[in-house]
Amino acid sequence: MQPVPGPAFAGQPAPAPTHPGQPISTPAHPAQPTTAPVHPASAPAHPGQPVAGPTYPGQPISGPAYPGQPTAGSALPGQSAPGPVYPGGAAGGTGRGRRLPVVALVLAGMLAVVAGVQAYQIHRLDGRLAATDRRLADAQGADGSRLDGLEKRAEALEKQAGSAFNPEAVASAVLPSVFRVSAGQFTGTAFAIGKPPSGGGTMLLTNFHVVESVYDGGGRKVFLERTGQRFEATIVKVDKDKDLAQLRSTARFTGLVAARTPVKSGQQIVVVGAPLGLQDSVTTGVVSAFRPDEGGSGPVIQFDAPINPGNSGGPVINGSKEVVGIATAKARDAEGIGLAVPIKTACDTFTLC
Image (cartoon, rainbow, N blue to C red; front, side, top):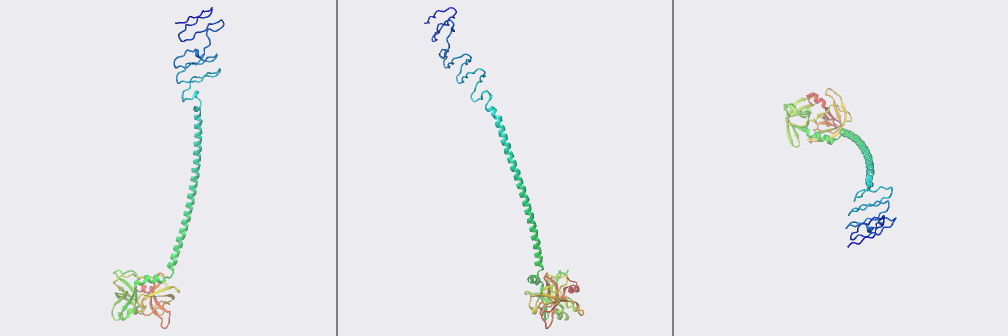
């Protein structure tokens, strides 16, 4: 059943037909709008669609809203309508998009500051390392100078120690080359001298009066004794005036070295021999004087080291372990007066040394 519409007045449009569930419009009067203002309840409603609010003069009518889409607010006169807002998006291109360049500039400035600080620290560290290297080089140079000074002082002390008279060192170096000579009924001393001869063996020197009885008797064989050992030797040459005799043995011994410079008064010496047959006897003293040739027998060395029969033919040694003379005799009825033939005389006589 449909309700019957009311009467229509002149100049008033006929109302639209009504449908079930639609409200009936009220009669229109002159000077009144045909339709009444639309209220929220008067807008057609569709299932699940929200009802639009009332419209006012100058206010745009919003479009239909869909589920999940926010409804745009009203725009005031002179204000641009905002664009749609999407979840997670910035409205109108403002906000974080404009902040990004500023943040980048700040970060770049901070990085520049950090890099500058690090460069400054590295520069300072390089300077400290260079200063440390210089101090180390200076210290090493000073240490090197001190070391050179110590080495020079050590060399000077070694030379001084070497020049110092050491009878023990002299005796230990000389004794293996000194022997007791047994010539018939007589004994004396002989020592190896110089380099080995071309035919091998060893050359030795002694006094002529030590081997005189054997030589004058036509014999040439004598014996060298040391530390329980006995070696045969041959009389090669003699000089009666200079009281010298040259011996040769087939055994090999270390020859002593002849001094190149003459002795001086006060020079310390060591005399090695077999006084009274006592082997490896050592006495010390100084050179008392160098006596020139008297009566054609040649120069002699006077020294104060004690000697006795059996020392004849033994070497007189200086502090450098060199032979300076051959002990020959001692003054009778006197003490501290010994005599020796200079080694140069023996070397020149027998072309030795």
